[in-house]
Length: 393
Image 1: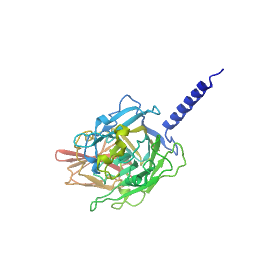
Image 2: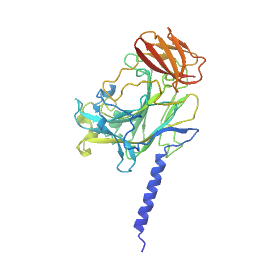
Image 3: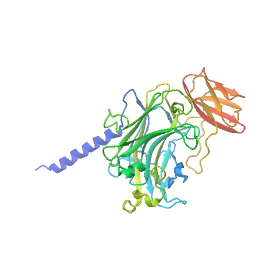
Image 4: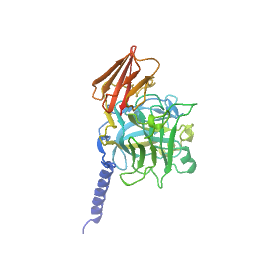
């Protein structure tokens, strides 16, 4: 007599393996996009040539409760699927004066992207009350919010807690512009999904080009899904208009915050996700991050570019951001360097590290003869040097 249970088990294993392989592909090379960079986190350890592991307890500017530690960032298997993942672990433990610890990583200076399709497959923890996981991007140059911020996914907002929809309630957002009376321009859209988003891996996708920022959920399972977030960034480059700030090379961040202004929980006793029934910890798993581009002139992918020193983002306190900015950016014919003093020398490099133009004794540069593309500007001011990015259109 045949052992049908063994046959059934074998079929189930094959189907599960096929499903896992399909999910690992993400949304794929569709609509003219080609895969240009990825990290599947399948090495023995996190690639520190790509990822900065942040170490700080500054609260992220949001009165968050955690201290970010290197010990809370690891690479390993997600228990249910066996997928090799980046793992960020939040713990209810006192460290350096903070009541919790967690993990946060970024690709600042190592991988910077302008336009394309950027997506990650993530298994989120049960946020309950108090956890705040996020997948987002920050502009590589200038102070926040002028550098621009694109929040592809964040969960844990107070509204979800109030409505009892913590596992379904998520949002996308953008922040940009000049700070005015303590505020700044921003635009967020919150969505309540039909089912839990904390029960399995889900694909979060940003499609970012010269005209729009669009965000999608589970394009791998539903290629025709409508965006849960859309914003037009094709209009005039007026002061505080998003188009002026959201066309800048940006780097990737993953983090798992504890408490703070987003969930509006500022006492560790209110963080129910880190209670005794969960062994006082929670984990966020990232299966992969993928970047696709079409090869158009407005796009840029810089992996550890030359002539671009980077602050040590794994240490506290962080090195202060440059006090110099350039306007407009992107630019067509001329740029002006804004800062505390006029640069003595301005040198423009292409992304291959080749010097293409030099200016002295001025803060205005004629770039009309440069080819369309991305450049690095190195400013010399006394004994200091500052590096800015430029998109020539």
